Image (tube, rainbow, N blue to C red; front, side):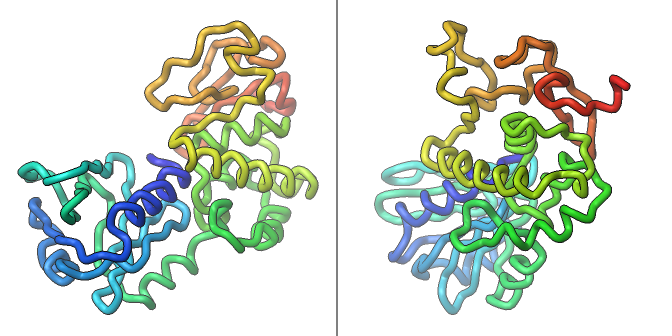
Length: 274
């Protein structure tokens, strides 16, 4: 599932290509046809993201709310759009650009109050200016749930996915199994600040890179990482490989229906070693 930086990048891409102008909207798949007809020829006034939710604002016509889910994808193109396939849920186009949405978990036309209700059930997003990490601390500091599970709770923190979860825990030496109530406040403040920096860079480069300068392939004289998720990381999907810092084999185990990755030496506190 795309992480929050991808959705913020999509919002920026829509603003760049379609913002301020009327767009043609259609639903070749047919599942969004009635709503697409209401949006067709309307001006895209705004595009924004909150966590893993994308909102495209069309004034009085409402907001197109998109959640990509596990398989959703947006494809952009320049010039005249090619004939669409019947898998396209929503196509937006103008004279210079087009965008096709396929396989989303959600694609719906909603009102302003319905949009606000979505925001209200989401936690602060490290990429939304003004979102306050102070909102997270009261619940985090009282919870017996592991920090790793809490970081994936979109009602607590919006936009953090499996990659950023694993990487920010490693970067701050936090054992993923540590209960939230045992996490020192200074660690939480540092992790939030780090997420802001890392995710902003993810928006800029459209990939996730989390290793510090001294651990890049160039600095260490090692081959670059080859993975369909791209980017240089410390622990994510590196099971059995040596930690870039201490050389210990990276471990993995399921947690909250997702695979968790960590280094047992750099992140001490693994209950499986007791």
